[in-house]
Image (cartoon, rainbow, N blue to C red):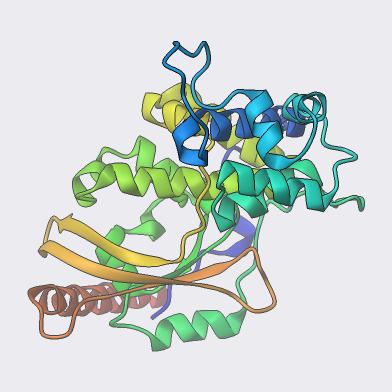
Length: 311
């Protein structure tokens, strides 16, 4: 049985005092360009190094501007956060010079040329279509959940609950991957490569920030995590972006032991701000058997919860 929190009870992360804050788009653009430039060495882009000690890490602004075919003054204004009149063609050239990934390139476009139409206030709740809830139920045996803005977990099935922990037992604002990853000690024990998980979570938050710099709930979440987690502060300051797609993940589950799972992420049709994540094990592997046991346990838990609700 798919578990879905009461939409009326869902509050976004960071609700409460301080929710009126915003991320500064100009600062986001400036720091993103600066950190991307700092990670490149002259040899990475075919420039000669002359042995003298460089005063700044990575490429100089003048070198980057030359590679992109723009003036140093123009690029300097852009790196200072003034991207209002920059053309897409110039951004493409700068992206190529910086060797940005596809996700980073999209992020740069969002930062430098945000949508001009008037935005409605960011919703505090996201709705999951009933058909998707039915799909999660039909997928019992395969850990699956729907997640949305700010890495909020919006809906899930019993097997996902058995694998990752009981989201239903968490307060609505705590059903959030960023909070779980950085503030819940159990996450460090669950994910064998916790650093990789943390990098992915922050990378997704950075993409969200590029799209929704005016979201006060996102700003509040970033502010809270920055105060409470040094690891988060370090990763956030790096300005790395990543769009979750597919890959493998190693876990140490308190009941099932070690598992290696493959995950796939699907952006949902009709709502680009929601994604479906699924996990499966290699056929015939020990992880598949462990996942089967977890699926059985998750189904039993769902039945018990349904019976308790009826009583």
